[in-house]
Length: 413
Image 1 (cartoon, rainbow, N blue to C red):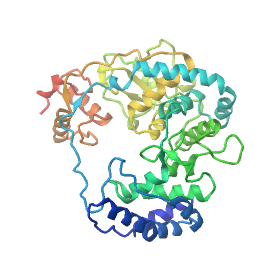
Image 2 (image 1 turned 30 degrees about the horizontal axis):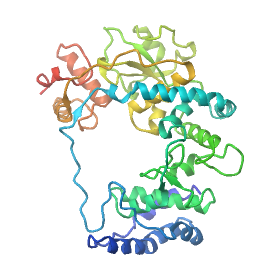
Image 3 (image 1 turned 90 degrees about the horizontal axis):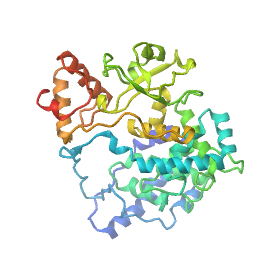
Image 4 (image 1 turned 120 degrees about the horizontal axis):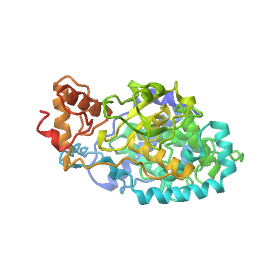
């Protein structure tokens, strides 16, 4: 089932463009039905999907006009919104204490209920049960979130008329392979409005590569089987590079004399070197001896305006699930609450003022003009923007804060 990936990449290069059609839903639906047979079926067939499976999956299939990001044939894609006037707030808004407390309480209860399964998962994959539970809780509320959309309908609609047709075409053909392989029927394949499937919220390509049968019934069931869902999450993390026996990271206190402009995965150092600069765990506990020579990175998502961290490569593995520093921190904090009964980060998320994305964008452009590497110039301060800002502050005799705030708007031009 995995052989389709390389074939699909080549096939997509030859996908014929859709003819323009009047913005009439009846005519567009007719075009969709023709596309299923004339475009989708040849691609599916060449990737190894059987005709029987294709017919089972597409019987009675229609467009779903209620999905977001649709671009019907004959219409123009919406212009990308720069969101330059959107207010840019402190990252602290991401960490709802009420939500985290609720997820942690449920997670601890489920850790007891599924203790045997979680222990087996940790033995097999090396991923702590608390981390698996945290992702499960964040993604689908421990499997309680409703998945109301037939995935084939969603993927086919978006493959036919969305802003990212090729992406959804790959996922649609992967879904057809799932049906053809007997993993799930089209009727059972329920997901989100974006086509993410089951309790782990895997896209079909991720399902084919990472889902496992952990309850031994011969089927990889991420919809109804808790063991399969949890083990599939762990297997995904292992495939992305999870290091057995290592934490995701530690909240720390960085001394005044240590610059915040040292963060990023490309500036990793052994933990002992960071500790030698005076960085200490905020909890007061020592760093584990086994971590002394291990690669560790500084992370200051709000610069000196918020909690500070030393993170391991496992932090960046969590980002593979959702490419966001704040998502990975949310998962790490929730996992620690489940495992150890800990609470919120000790460092407080500061108020950076009524900043706009256009303000941050202007700072990035000014830094680029001064030959600093800020990463993507998009009005969002990633780690390269944060550390370049800190480096500019230090060069100008300012105390590095490594985060855009109102006081810097007039200074950095």
